[in-house]
Length: 471
Image 1 (tube, helix red, strand yellow):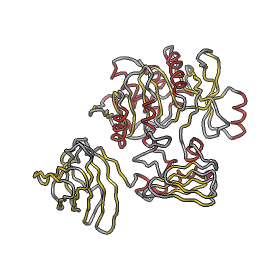
Image 2 (cartoon, rainbow, N blue to C red):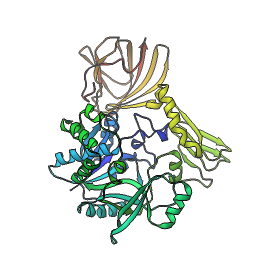
Image 3 (cartoon, rainbow, N blue to C red):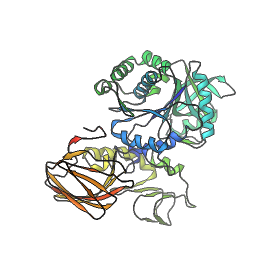
C-alpha cells in the first residue's frame, strides 16, 4: 500500500501580497485556475494509492478541508501541526499516524502541495520506479532533469546505477544552491539533478533512519503522536510535545546521512513556485515577454509580471518589473530584486500590520467576510455564508451589529428567539446580546454587517457554541 502524504504547511512569504500567513501560496491558484493543493491532489489520479494524509498548520485546517472536499478523492485525515517544525518532524508525524491508521507499515509518497509538475505521466512513471526501490529498503528522492543552470535550487549528484530501465541511482551527494559557474559545471557533467523534495520510502524505514541520526526529533514526535485525538477529519497531536521538537528538513536530518538514499529521474518541467520571478518564468507571456493576469493594459512595456486581482492595472514604459495588486496592497519591485520580499514581510510583521497576516477578504469554515470600510467607531463588512453553514453562538462586549440581507435567507437567533430574514430585511444586535446566524437555504446567504462601538477587533467574540470546534 502507498499512502500519499501531502505537506501543505509553510507561509509563502516570497509571494506576498498574494500569499499571506493565514492564506499562503499552497491554497492559491498561482498557475492556472486551480489552487496548488488541489492540483497536487488531482495529480494522484491514476496512481495505485490509498487515502491521502494532509499535513497542514492548525490555522489553515478549514482551507485545507474545503479544498479536499472540492477534490472529492479519499482523504484519511488532515494532520494538524501546532507549530511549524520543517519537513522531518512533519513527515515523522505522518509516518506514525499512517502506521496506526492502516495497522500496517505502508510506503509513503511524500509530496509538497506547492509544486508544478507539467508531465503527470512522467510523474506516475517515477512514482512506480521509486516504489519498487522503496520496497527493497531504499529511501528514494526525485531528481529533476535540469532545464538550465539554475542557482535557486539545491542539487543531487547521482552515484552508482541501481536500475537502468527505471533510471534509479544511488545518491552520491546532496549539494547546496550553487553559484552560476558551479551550476553550469553541474549541467555539463550530466550527473546532477535539481533536488525536488519529493520522496518515497517505507514508514518504518524512515522512522528508523530518523531515530539513528536525529533521535531527539523522533522522540518528540512519538510523544506528540502518542496522545493524538481525532475531530472529524482533523487529527491533533500534543502541542507542547511537538513544540519542543527541533526543526529540521528531511534532507538534513536523514537523507544526507543515510547509506540507503536513492534518486529516481523525473523527466518533467517542474517548479516549486518559490518567488514571483519563478512564476514569471512559468507563466505564458505576450510577444513582449509580459506575464499578465487580470485586468491589465500595457504600453511599451516588456518582460514584466503584471497581476491584478480586483481593478485595472496599467503600465507605460515599464521593464523587468513585478507588479501585483490585491484589495489592500500593491507590490512594485524589479524582478532581480524580488528576493528582498522576506525583509519586507518581516517589517510588516514587526509593525503588526494586518496585511502580513491576512487578506481583506477573510475565509472562515462557514464562508467568508470582506471588510468594505472602517473608521472611527464603525466598520462595514460583506458576509457570505455557505448553504447549510452557521456562525457560532456568540456575543460582543464592545460592539453592536446591524445585519441587512442582500441575497438568500438568514436564520437569526437573539437570546434564544429565532427569526427568518429574507432579502432586503434587517435586524439589530445590541451589545451583550447572545446571537447566532445560519443559512438554512440552498443558495449562498449574502448580507451587509454594520458594526458600531468603542472596539471592533475580531478578538471581541465570546463563543458559547461552535459546530467547528473553535475556542
